[in-house]
Image (cartoon, rainbow, N blue to C red; front, side, top):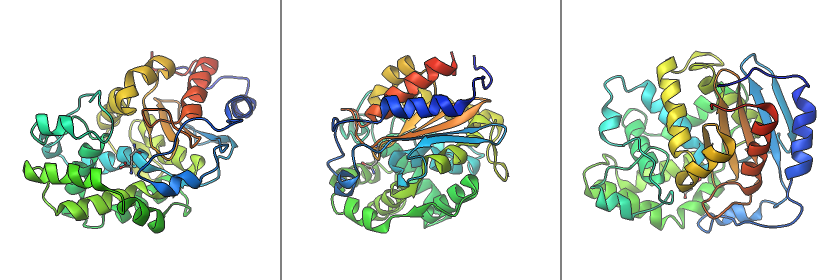
Length: 310
Ligand SMILES: NC(=O)CC[C@H](N)C(=O)O
């Protein structure tokens, strides 16, 4: 059950969340395969809440752009579903939690090239391949989608960061070649990985991401009208709840009680159906690749506001 926005007003709660959760010393890790992310100061912390009624509340570094990384997977899935009335995508990717790390190869081989879900890397590569059939430059299409939904010209693809990640993308290339070997990739493995990495390298702020994700909290209604049907929006929320935090999805559901999607840039996008979209960002990660301080802050916010799907 969700509850409506509560008094006292949100600003003091968000300010207090920032005071309590902004890291005071360096703990956690940065992703080994993206050298560029190691340079982001450990004490960055931002939070933004975009409400269904159109208000945005924020605190801390909510207007500092960061690398959205795997949060992009929510939006590419939304774009793919929108154009997939026949359901063809779901014959190429499942909707089950993987219980394995986001870049795991083992399960993909055992399960004959059908990824467990669209939010692990293998699944996102299939979604990217699907999008590229219609639009070869799916990353730029994603950027336009995000720019429109966030109602901001701020988002951009950090091409230098993408090039840096691409130079150490052996695992993602291996996943793409596995997919290709099993007949589940139509474009060249290299171009799908390049496109995927450029999607991950989009830079956005917490405020922009919260606004961009609002359609998921509003039955599919985005800034410029209908993005998805209510049933599609519900289903993306369900996949976020069960698969959005990789092999920490159960722990996150236990602590936060809301559908979320993380990225190794340290961002987490969370949906409170009917109420708001929340984005929190703090760059240092736990062992599963999810923001340490971000997860703790969301657990705290959920407890303080009563926002939960349970
Ligand atoms: N979990 C993530 O954010 C992973 C995204 C990253 N670009 C990768 O492919 O490894």
